[in-house]
Each structure stands twice: as C-alpha cells, then as structure tokens.
Image (cartoon, rainbow, N blue to C red):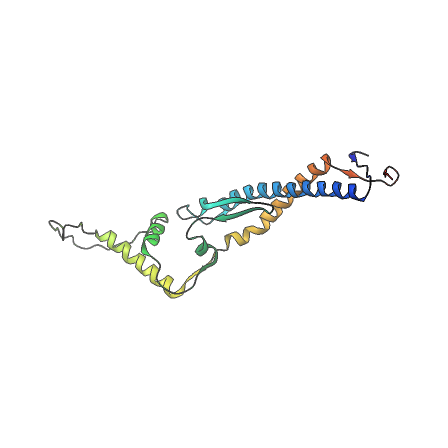
Length: 195
C-alpha cells in the first residue's frame, strides 16, 4: 500500500494527526479557490457584454482569510448591467453619450441649409448640428430608461455554474496532491499504543 502510515500512540495523538490533516485540507481548499478565482476573472471578462470594454475589464479577485476568494466587478455601472434598473429618475447623459460612441450610434441631423455665423455666442463655442442631434438622442434614451427601466443581463449569475465546476476541478487536483503527501493509513494491527 502506498502512502504514509501513521502510528497512533493514543487518542490525543490521533487528534493531533487529524488536526494536521484538517489544516492541510483547509489550505488546499484556499489554493483551489484562489486558482478558480483567477480562472473566473478571465472567464467573466471573456464572456462579458461589451460596449466600451469597461465592464469586461473591471473584474477583480481578492483573497479572503480562511474562506478562499471572491470575484467581483469594480465598474460603477456593474450593478445595472447585472440586474438592470427600475423605472425612475433619468440617468446622466455623459455615460449614455459614451455608450453611443462606443456602439457607433450616430444621430443624423438631417440635411438643412447651412447658415454661416460669425463669432461665438457669449465667448463659448457653439455645438454643431451633429452634437446637438447626439445630445437630443441621448436625452430620448435617458427618458426611455426613466420610463421603462432596463433589463439585466445576469452575466455573473449565468457564470456561477461554470465557476463552480472549475472550483471542483481545482479542488480535486489540490486534494489529490495533499492526499499523496499526507495520506493517513491507520490500521489496527500496525497501530501502536503506549501504556
């Protein structure tokens, strides 16, 4: 039989051996969780819905002492991508304009006769017809979001089964390594007790 044989000298010695094995298993599970979290970050980034790429690159992982690891997104809009948004106040126009630019959505201001104007109004540069059309479209999108809300993509929730499967693969690998290095075999005939 391969593996290490533990000679038990009594119940206290058995308890020490089991405690040592328990610590090795706990450490192995933390390693498996950390490895699975690395895989999860890459998987979530690869399968994330994309507009500008901010959400896809926002996934991070961190170690939790004695509990493994956690994975999450640091993007401000991650909660809205994941679970959506209820109807309510209008969202700001800036992020909508950036989203429109990332998605290459343009507003056609229509063909009108151009009038040349000299100078600027109040020292400020006037917005072009295209810029005004984009802002108008962004305002309409914001109004629709305020009226209807948005539906969530549930990206992280859909990824949980794949992450669990990956954790199981990593846990199996590290547990096999732990058991190879500290395989306890306790046999009644080979067990020695001191009196």
